[in-house]
Length: 68
Image (cartoon, rainbow, N blue to C red):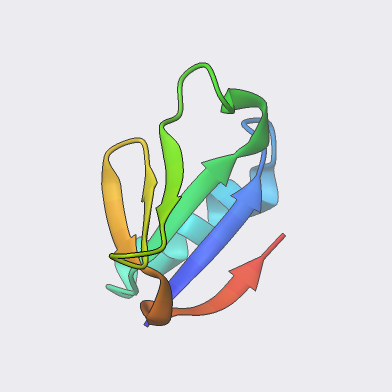
């Protein structure tokens, strides 16, 4: 199970949520929209069904929720 968090750098609620998920050992990946495409390598490979954000890899089938 992985939660995809779509947000921005200034979102204090997302900061809190990600910190709580880290403490609870829940896997999550954060996408700050203002970092696309400059600082974020973001691609979806349909053959591997994998999402890569800033070097973090997650299988698409493993994403169980999106928070935005």
